[in-house]
Amino acid sequence: MDSKTAKKYVESLIFSSLEPLSKNDIKKMLAEYGNFDLEKILDEIFLDYKDRGIVLANVEERFFFKTSDYLKDYLTIQTKKIKNLSSAAIETLAIISYHQPVTRAEIEKIRGKPVFRGTLDSLLELKWIKPHGRRETPGRPVTWVTDYEFLKHFGLSSIKDLPKVDELESIIL
Picture 1 (cartoon, rainbow, N blue to C red):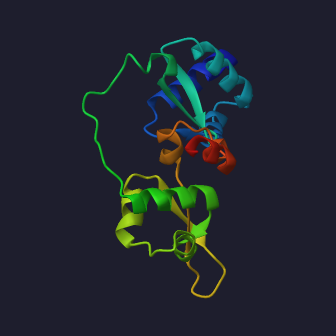
Picture 2: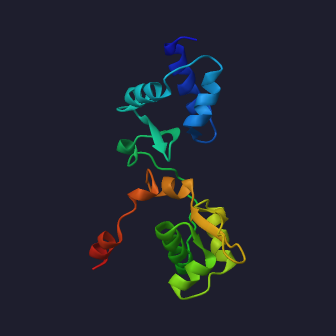
Picture 3: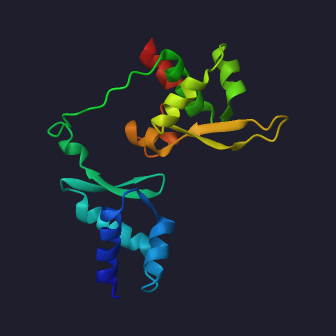
C-alpha cells in the first residue's frame, strides 16, 4: 500500500466506524499494510476537510467526522430527545467535572447532601460520567470521571477546556 492509499484507508476507517477511533486503533489497522506516519496522514485529512461541510474532529485523541460548526445553525435534527436533569444531577455533574476523579462520598461532602443512586444512573445513561476505578482507601469506593459524551455534548476537546471557577463567578455576578 502506498501513502496515498494509506490516507484513503485511514479516512474510510474513521468515516465507517460506529465509534470515534483512537490513534492506537488506527495504527493497529494500518500496521497490517506497512509503516506509515499516522500524524502526517491525520493532519492531511484534517486539512482536506477544514473548509467543507463535514470536518475531522478530535476529542481526547479520538477521531470522527462531524458536521462543520459553520453549518450548525442551518442543520437541526427534528426529533430531539429532551431529558431534563434534576438540580441534584446538575450539581453532581459539575462536581465530578471539576473534581474528577471523585468518589460518591466526596461528592456528598461537597454538595452537603446525599447523592442518590438514580442521580448517578441518569448521568451514566447519558454517558456523561463513567466509573474510573477504585480509591485505595477503606471500602475501596468507586471514583467517577466525565465520559467522552460529556465532552462531545458540551463541545469540549478535553476537560481542560472547561471554564475556570473565577471565569464562572464573573459570568454569574
